Image (cartoon, rainbow, N blue to C red; front, side, top):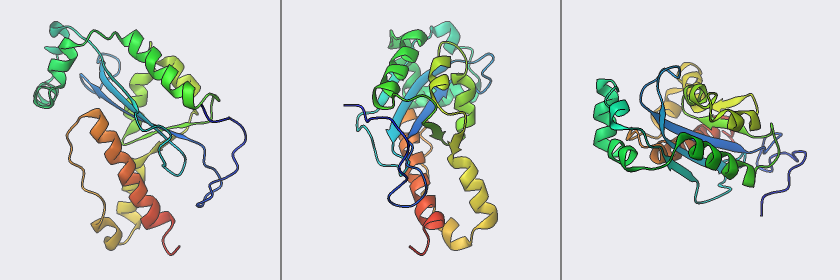
Amino acid sequence: MPPKSGPSKGNPRGGITDDPLVWIDCEMTGLNPDVEEIIEIYCVLTTGNMELIDEEGFHAVIHWPESRMNQMDEWCTKTHAGSGLTAAVLKSELTPEAAAEGLYEYITKFIPERKKALLAGNSVYADRGFLRKEPYTKVMKHLHHRILDVSAIKEAARRWCSEDILANVPVKKAKHKARDDILESIEEAKYYRNAIFRRGD
């Protein structure tokens, strides 16, 4: 059953809200949302305290023809071929429209209230740039306009935190596979939460 929406009662482990986070990582054919395409999406839903709402998550590999994939730059071509994503994209029969509808239905099943959940992830502003385009716009319209960007927390920590905190930041494997990337982002955010925002508890 989806959780009942309503006013937040605060986070029992600290903070004034436990409003949910929608963690999304996209793999794309490049970084320019005006000319490039999403080829893979992974989404995980958590509470504001980063406890999983659903264990399964949402995953989509979106079909694009070989002619489109051949237009990728050298970095994307090498990375996506090495991870097996290019082959999966060519094999997939899922359209962007079907992926967008599936993502929207997944999020709204567990988080039916509009403008409550924040988009979260590492450098997630880049993902949002792609998700603001059709056919994904209704997903973004369902979410709050603010985001939780783990990369921003990281940059703040690099400038304002002591070396002992920075020395223990989880090392990312940089596989550039959407599921692995988003789970690593959640673990990194948990580390900053415990090391910075709850230090001394």
